[in-house]
Length: 115
Image (tube, rainbow, N blue to C red; front, side):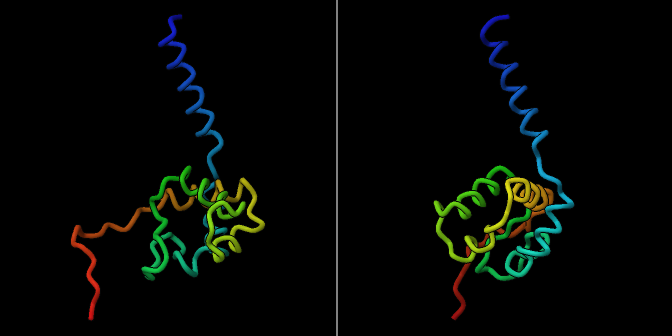
């Protein structure tokens, strides 16, 4: 087997193992209802522009962000409090839930400040 085939095989194995470690969408929905809904909305399309929309976000990005809030390397007192007590599996689950939702489609119009 040449080195390119070995590299391709290694990439396929890594990709398949990360898929197997994916979160449980239904468990993530329960976590969202308990911890996320007030600010982000149950499905991640909250109405308040102060809080980011999470629907359709990449799961791996969300897990990384949650880890960083929990360990303090990403500073936000609200999110730090929300991530206390979340296990690695909880983070995988809630990330899978939001990643499975349809994101809000917005126009390409620039946002303006109303006077």
